[in-house]
Image (cartoon, helix red, strand yellow):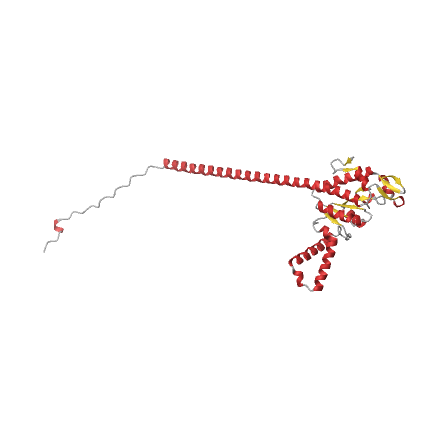
Length: 315
């Protein structure tokens, strides 16, 4: 029978075959796990499968919501059974992972971790450009040793540009340092937790056998599915927001163009009205001006009559 509603199908049969219900020996139990225990058999606690499914569904919805909001998660699996699963599932949903030793300050001192990541990228860049060949043999060996160490511990964090919103892990007892840093930073912890664990140390406990690789694979893969589903929704939201932004921008441009055309039309009308008013004013002024007098013709100069005696006699 499948459970999970919209969660990627997980059947009771699949869970039983994985051994998710097998807890630790009764003598090793943590009393805080009592609400999640069905009973005991041959001195082994049997985990209530309904509680496992309930925790898995809660974690699924939580991860989906985080991813749909654009948040990121960090898979933590430093125990042997969880290493490969954490790497594969984190890569599948394009998230981050820690599969080797948890470096102190990965969360609480992320600035230092970022500087070490930059150093790793710097070495890789030098290696690709061939500049390491300029080093002495001893210097090159030291740099390559540094690269291997950085890559082993930080390779799963190389694309992490901000702190994750949640940690996904198996066995919070083993990952106690990661849990402590997450709680200090206010980051949620989702954990596959066995009968020897403390469910109050995590935000979403998924009771189950945290020593079985198959169980870890089921839990991590379902949560990776949730992240993929959430990211798909987030991408759709971003697309819709971009389309809305373009639509609003187009409307703003159209409105601005209409307002500009309207202003030009009004300015043209005002200019035409001013021109007409000026013409009317000139016509009115011409109408009211007095008639101009005709210019007087200049009088011919009067010639004086010459008397005969005034004419000199010819010699």
